[in-house]
Length: 197
Ligand SMILES: [Cu+2]
Image (cartoon, rainbow, N blue to C red):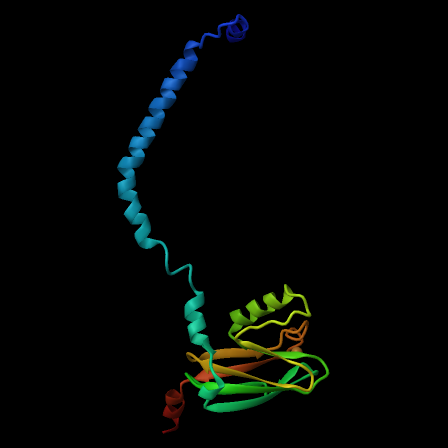
């Protein structure tokens, strides 16, 4: 109440408690700055050493393991497949060797467009997401995928990476969910021969 009376009187005298508060805040800020400077030197390196790296980049090692696109001249083998409107690839499963370069020759025997997308589960999901957010008339260009129009034959050459199980799949709307996918077993030929002897 006294403050309002003073300010109406023309010369607003700063109340004493305001000055005291200002001084207290200034001291508090000063103390905080000093504390930050003193403790910052101790916290900084400790926080950096454990943190970044392992958790944030699961993508690149996985991509190396799956392999990469290659030139058709590098291929040591050709595998022919058909894609049909019964939402199936023939054959529905394949075996390749670690590091092998294979050209896939995919013929669409149906009336609808189909695609052949190669990759692990994560890459298939990624591709499905990309397809879902793309206008249907826009033709995509992914290094691990080919679209095959009805009656056409397209080629995709891939250099396989580490041993594991990959998929080839069609992400035309609804096709993947209808079961249009196959399995690629990537294995080490040396390990395959071992049990025979
Ligand atoms: Cu399809």
